[in-house]
Image (cartoon, rainbow, N blue to C red; front, side, top):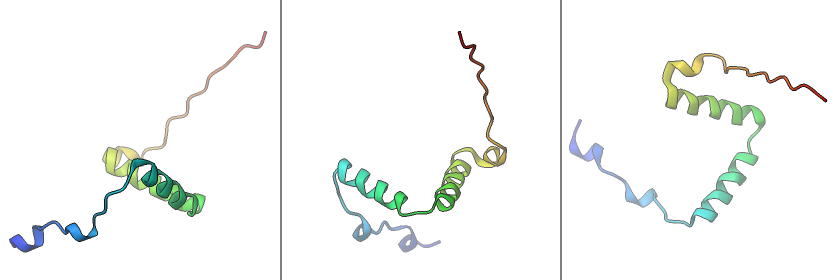
Length: 67
């Protein structure tokens, strides 16, 4: 691997406000189908948790007694 391949390309970076970024993020995700959002969520879980993310999500039940 040569040194040129490790250089950071600053031409693709732009500065923005947090509010603007949040609005763009929300618009982006709302433009996706529920299936596409679910697939992206699963990929993010795998990045954070590795192979553990492939396990099923735990289900938690809570029983409430009505009075």
